[in-house]
Length: 278
Image 1: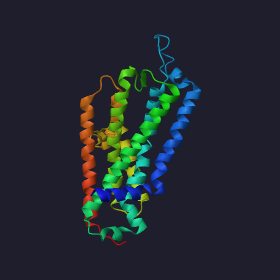
Image 2 (image 1 turned 60 degrees about the vertical axis):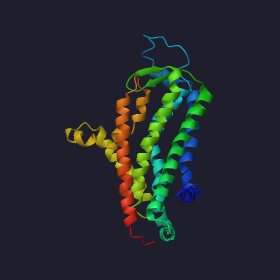
Image 3 (image 1 turned 135 degrees about the vertical axis):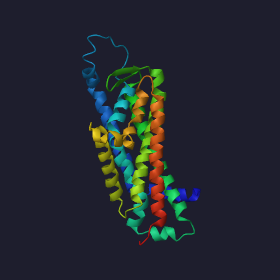
Image 4 (image 1 turned 30 degrees about the vertical axis):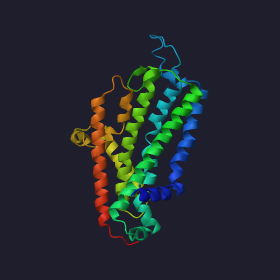
């Protein structure tokens, strides 16, 4: 199994499309962070203008942690698309290249090949998310330094610098867990089709439909929205609340894990029974 995963990783990282997501992140993150440094915190000043009349703020609030948090909030809507580029290609890509028969005539079961490809997908997802984390946080801290983290969501919360690092670490671990669910969804669609574009479109279509149902305040959707995985896609944001709602996070982890397991088992059931014609 280890050798199968090794070969799948070689195949994955020899493909040019594997590096599309890395390239986009490598372009956007430095561009945004340098622009925010040059702007000199104007966004933060505008956001806090109303409070400055009643409160005194000390220290360096416009720092690397603040910028890294803004990057995390803004880019996370697009990360599922970048993840699906690779996850959707794992099975469908073999059909597109006409290599399904070639890999399945080897004395290795379909289940072992399926597991190797899924583990490869998981490795890529984890590496990609923490590449984003390392680049956004590392570069932001170098450019703007450290300090307390001011969180501007529904209100304003200031987290002491001593707590920020571990909150970011757990937040990115939670974000990785949600991206694994997205990758599993794309992997599931990949088991049906013979073109890698299909899983990408289908994954984004499901995300859009589920997200719309989750946010529209219609009574008809109140029961279904409780069971949609999109409800917990932003559970990493809860790490920047005080106190941290650990019970909600545990529920989100369990819920996303259930959806992930359902996607993987469904994909496996399709793959082992699939009539390979190419």
